[in-house]
Image (cartoon, rainbow over all chains, first blue to last red; front, side, top):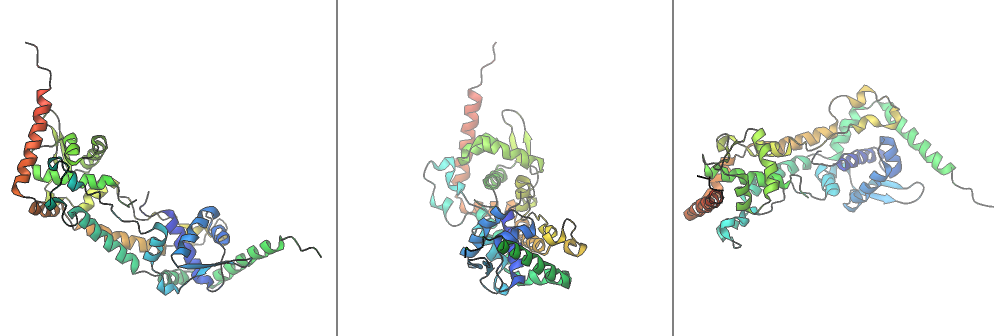
Length: 176
Length: 176
């Protein structure tokens, strides 16, 4: 198992689709089916992205999610924190103060300042977070965009339109 | 919950005790009780450190664990990998190839090379691992050593000796 959950991967890929859709909202269900991932699982990720101010939701048959800010202003760190909740690399239990020779009263020299083990972990975490903060959604969307042929975006637009048509055509007609 | 488990914290603190004990082995049980942590939990960590070549075990009433190499040659990355098993930051599920418009056959442009999302995560992981590889057990042991007053190591030696005496005095005497 990896340190970051699969929710982070799903969340990032969805946000990349929202970059390409621009002002047109995409539904969580369509995004799930487009990518072959569980709709119910994805439905739990979007509220976290919304709460963090990365996406905004709109209601109705044409509703869905759009980015709440420019993709240049959304870093990978923002997304990881939104989904994982600013999970620390290391959760120091302060075991240095539990040493049996201290009885129940550790001396101040033993517990003063940050534990040296914790300090190492904080430096490693800082390095990781700095690397994630350097990358924006816009940067990665450009990488994806350069790889895809022009007809790909047309295929996607057609697929989305078919989904929308199927959804609206199955609605019960109003009685006259 | 943190990314790194409490096993990493316990493992590092035990190794720091082994730095100060030098050639004298310390038992896993004594180390657990000295630090107020579960002996059965700690007993599962030491085999991982031994398998990674960081400690070596000796049998018998004076047996226990010693460092298998100089503390200058044991990095925090070695310890984390020994305990966590080289757990990746991110486990790419290659969802880019599952896009519904590809049917079951993603084109090569879509799956060629490392996924751009995965590439970001690999850079963040590399930064974290580099920070962990920069720190050695010797460096952190020196930090601890500078804080402790001289009588602390005497207190520890006395505590260990009392534990040893208690263990050997309760053995059934041989019949004449």
